[in-house]
Length: 24
Image 1 (cartoon, rainbow, N blue to C red):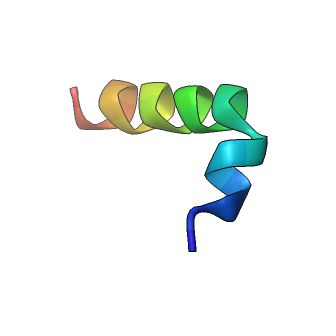
Image 2 (cartoon, one colour; image 1 turned 90 degrees about the horizontal axis):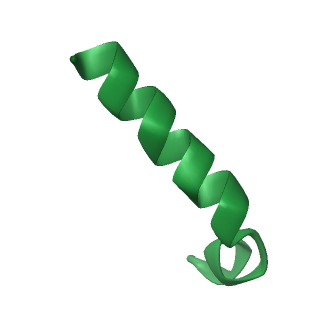
């Protein structure tokens, strides 16, 4: 399920940043 996360850690970081920015 998280195989894409292991291949794209930078994309995951960007996604988390976007979620935090949207929630905040």
